Length: 215
Image (cartoon, rainbow, N blue to C red; front, side, top):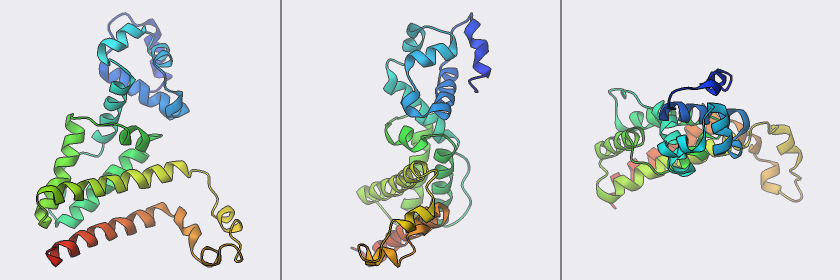
């Protein structure tokens, strides 16, 4: 829902719906960032009063939880009939795309803990892949949190680096002060697609080798 489209809501006669509130909140974040989202600004965009919002979401944290679920919902869908590593890669890629598709998506999702269907479905899909790999018990849970945290961290870094010029990074490195960095491929840190794929391979390779070692 666009903010422009929500202008019609200023003459709203009926009760506001929870999904409309979430869509409008996400649109506000897309315009001004997460810091710009206030319940007052949200009320103005919806053409309603605070009590109407608080009947649906008892506080802003509850609203953020619902926003997180809405972001994660776009990552859902059937997984390919493939081995566990490919399934993890597909799901991690979908998660990344969902977070990148929303301004401050990683901050919204990373700060929320919900037990709604989108979040639980993502966790269940990851857990199924890890169990197929041979993980069990707490190791399976740790494995899925490792993958999920990696995706969150990478997207958080990428969304925070928008507008950074690789040449500015290189110019800041003197061989005298930073002998290793100055002769490294450090500017490639801004190649987020390649580094995401590399890091995910390191994680799944590590899980596979850990299981093979029998430790």
